[in-house]
Image (cartoon, rainbow, N blue to C red):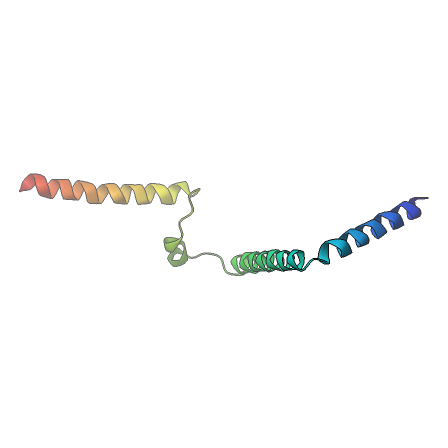
Length: 90
C-alpha cells in the first residue's frame, strides 16, 4: 500500500517537473538560480579551506566582531582627539 502511494507521489512530481521545465523562461530562471547557488557553495567551501587572516579581515570587517569594532572605534577617536589637540594648540 505504501509503495503504491510513493509511486503516485513520484509520478506526480515527475509530471509537475516536466510541465514546469517545458517553458524556456522557467528553464532559464532555474539555471540562473542553480549557478548562483553553485557560486555560493564554492565561496563557502573556499572560506572553509582558507580561514581569514588579518590582512583579509582588514578589508572585510565582520559587524558581529565586537573586539574588532571597538578597536576601530577607538582608532577613529584617536584621530579626532589628535586633530582637536592640534587645533587647540594653534
